[in-house]
Length: 370
Image (cartoon, rainbow, N blue to C red; front, side):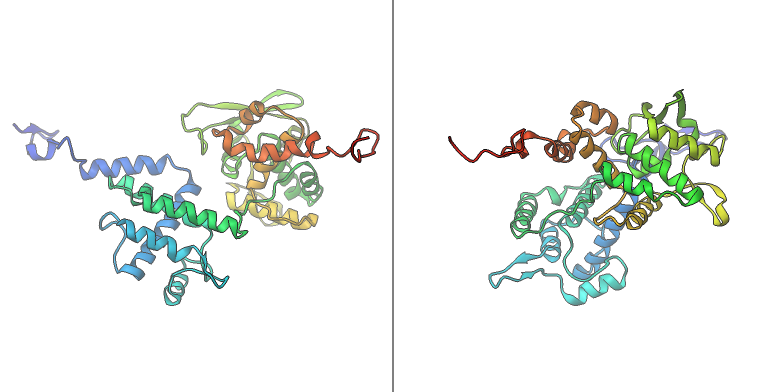
């Protein structure tokens, strides 16, 4: 039986009746739109970049497009051996990506430099491919034993050969103080000082969280304390609003920025135009990373600095000062203990007696049995 629309015209039953075992195209599109809207902007960009790379590589290696059908497991295995270098008996390292394909990928601007990719990059692109297959309701080839075993053993091989996972240098207390000492360049320095201290003292905030903060998210608790609200973040997507404290030097730095760049609403940390005018638009996450790198250079700090340096540095310093892990995670909102423990233990070991077993309180080391 047909139903009527708002004009009293019958709508064919075939357009209203759904097949319970198959998603309609419009429903699939709506579901994908929800997923995209609920995913952080930085994550969306990284997904797009990874899928663009898969598309280009598949076209060059197999003359096929991404999305035509599920990828077979051998194709994913080929991707791994094309991009991860492995040791061979003569002591050199090889990967199977043909030189002409490598050049074509670079000319297409989906690959930055010649040669193999980092293990983390390959792992990320496999994860994105797996998510793509799940959205398409296809079997995930990246979960096949042949792929997971190969990737695990490839990671071990690289570690044995001294290729370690690169991490950003942690900004602990001393490097932070060095960065803050460079913040003497007028309005820019006032803003950068407030941003550094809020991101670090406020719980090691991610750059996406910092640039998303708004004036409306702030609440004054007392003269020495602000509370700021976090909404949806990378790990908390429930919509629950959580308040985090900002105290002492960090609160005073925020006061100073709000005094010189007053605004009733909108982003807390905003761009600066030429001649020192404060723009209404928020800083980007990339701008935060560049600011940290620039100030590290001004301070003469050696290391690989980035926005994540603030987050890892906060956790490392908390471990160094003996702050209980539960309190640290309440501030950072890490969901996984394993994720946070590496930084926390590195900091706590710096003050551990286990690192000074040969030292006596009077400064003399024991030399053996009497």
